[in-house]
Image 1 (cartoon, helix red, strand yellow):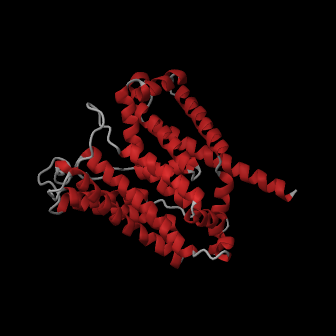
Image 2 (cartoon, rainbow, N blue to C red; image 1 turned 30 degrees about the vertical axis):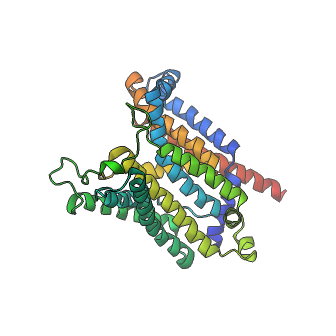
Image 3 (cartoon, rainbow, N blue to C red; image 1 turned 90 degrees about the vertical axis):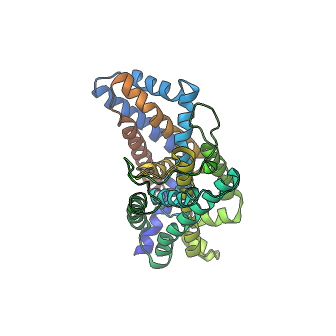
Length: 356
């Protein structure tokens, strides 16, 4: 029975997600958001115009969009790989925290290393920490039949509490700080700032490169073929000799490592410390970005940038028009709901046509 249920997800995933469904779902989400803005007494065109000015009105604004897109790109591609293989890796938030912890242990060590090597070491340790964390739900899903969504969400909370403990009750914590945080990082562990006067670091460009890399991996390599086969038809994959259990664990670990890299970049590229709840909600936004993209790595780039525009421009929209500052999050949620809804309707339509 559990196997039959697990097989439904990949099948729906293959039919649900297409560029047409994603575009239509986003359009409906924006229309629904405009309706809510209108109800609040604000002209939707004025509100959306203010949002676009907040995201593209200046170079500084646009760099803010790129900075915000960094964790969504890396987290989104981690989730997207799971979608392609029929595994729902919703633990990105926890992986980000583990990556932040790993980077903090290295970055607070004041190692006498050149910046490039120091940054690389932070990345490697962060990815190892997160990869081990992701192997737990991967193993439980593949070899014990434990639901990966439930398992990863529970582990997210453990990761958050573990981070809280590290920045309050260990030798890595800043004593007497006004807010729970770690000791400051060594300067040679900082990611470089690409444009003076902004917070633009290479994180977004690293995310773009990794998304493009996995696009080609999924499309043109044996590993990508096995991943797609496992997601579209698990029985055929097993018949063809694919070790589905190992493949599931590998996919979960890769997604976790990407999430850990994302958390490390947030710490050494933007904050230069580990803070309590430093990426609250970002991991779940990464899941939403992957869902809207339908597991397509190129689509993850588009959806991550779209969400970043909404988040970066939302503050300006709120200040200029009086719309609630949470409206951008509401619009993101509406887009996700409509993308899924359009996909389900499309899947049912296809099913009815096949029966006829």
